[in-house]
Length: 410
Image (spheres, one colour):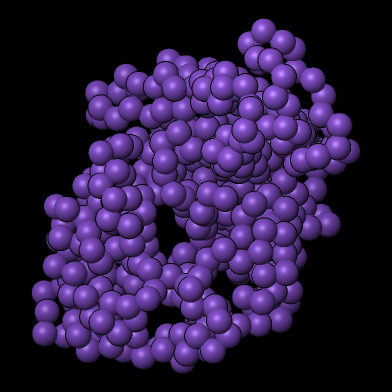
């Protein structure tokens, strides 16, 4: 499964319900994470030190393990270089040690519980060149003390560490979608490190985004075939519940609920809604899940092709990449970037190449391999046959919002 990392403000989710006591806020947020787990979003908080006072407890992580999707990784803490005195380098070590002393007891608990292999540290959100010397000093000290804990960052270095000198200190580097560079990703993968991408309010058409007013199918395409074909390792989004000063959404589809969640941007940092009976999904959230499932299907299909039984029609093995994940790249026309994003099979992501088609065209090939069909057969010349029994999850990719009984909002 594609890695994901998200941010949350526990108090923001509880605000529309008028709940402020810590126990009530915690109870509501457990409900939120139970809900989001159904949409492939795991309980986590990349801005833990901003919105929470302590790292997660072992009990909280065990609860995440029991939800759908389980526990894939979790952020211990957020290191913000802006809180350091940039012009006083002689104070950096002491301030870094104070940060590390704060998380040390929790790290010890994670080791004892066998969870340390899923922990990471988030640092330096969109930090620029003036902070790189400070970041190098603090992360060098962090790696000396916690060598087995990965570091994730969205620091702005388009070379993912080569220019800033942070390459070996950052395990998971995240840059925004317009940045995409196959060469940089290949270099990081060769070194055993990861490269992710993320979206934010500054990413505009023709690029995909999670904001309202964008075709939600673009999000499915980004998280599914684009992420798979681009070989990115994860997707990050800064918030899921940003709706400060908003009430519960209790009226019908022609709602008066203000969708603007950051300045005049509608839907920024808000992937679902505070409904009268708990969280309500958006169409964007549905497409988030569908994209994650498409990615999973492509991964499973790749494994099935790699382990195809002897005698499998070779045309099936050679046909699947072009059928399920079209290779022609999407080349944005923006003068601000020369990036090339593969995986849509279209000249403009505002008209993605039938995002559902990636999954739908995968099914007959997957079925042929799963049921060991070795008779002459080719998906381009023979209509797909409905599988009987066997793998069922791919068929769940074709849900449509109209098939659900509850209300839907963008």
